[in-house]
Image 1 (cartoon, helix red, strand yellow):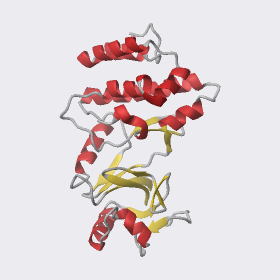
Image 2 (image 1 turned 120 degrees about the vertical axis):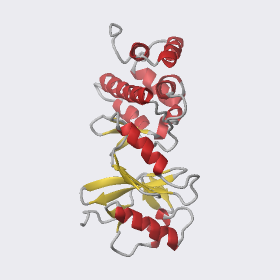
Image 3 (image 1 turned 90 degrees about the vertical axis):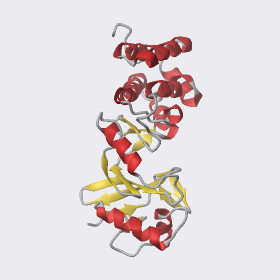
Image 4 (image 1 turned 30 degrees about the vertical axis):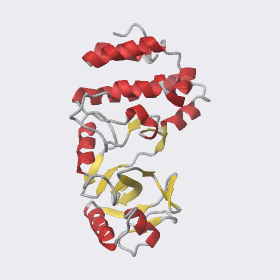
Amino acid sequence: MRVNLKLHVSYLDMPLKEKYARIICYPQYSLKYLEERLREMRSLGVKALCFSGDKKIGGVPILGKGCVGIVVPAYMDVGRAALKIRRTDADRESMRHEAEMLRIANSVNVGPRLLGFTRNILLMEFVEGMPLLEWIEKVQCESDSVEKARKVLREILEQCRRLDEIGLDHGELSRAIGHIIVDYKDNPWILDFETASVRRRVSNVTSICHFLFLNGGIASLITKLICHGAREKLILALRRYKRSLSRRTFNEVLRKCGLIDQSIE
């Protein structure tokens, strides 16, 4: 397999440049760590890595960098995927927990599809898009901005509702700035299940509503686009939803957010 890209591509059947090896073993490089991770990538069917994205480490572009892992595009015989590589200083010994949480989320059609995992590697469906904040800033200049925004925001809340129903709490949606992207067909995706849990009380809908409609810069942008109900009424609706987690109280939240008609029960 050869990928039609000239820059920042490293094939796993060829010698690896040091700058790429240091990404795979970030932040503490060792030959042992490198060989272990390369073996695991090959076992998952990875043929090449493509170092591209908006973030950088040592001048090398990547898709994402967090406390647990580094994300880069990967290529397999079946196409492109997203590869999350466990940091050598991560506070967990493997990627198993995140893989299990993502698998549960996938069961209700939330998150990128899990393709496989090993101790140090998480392989996922590649989703190309832009962060939610950038998408909101872009769409507000379009003629059908209100309709598009309502559709995407409602789908985000519906995904959070499905996570609530199965008892999976994402854990980061009150600070969702880097955890939601919108693809080029205007479909939202919830990412990063590394801190998710099935052992604590779920708060996905309440957390995302605080982020989108009540607190911070993105809430002010959304308020300009969508004339949702008063802040106090939304907070009361969220409290009622949190007590019952019912569809009826969830629809009330959607109404207070301005995402469905008042007549829908």
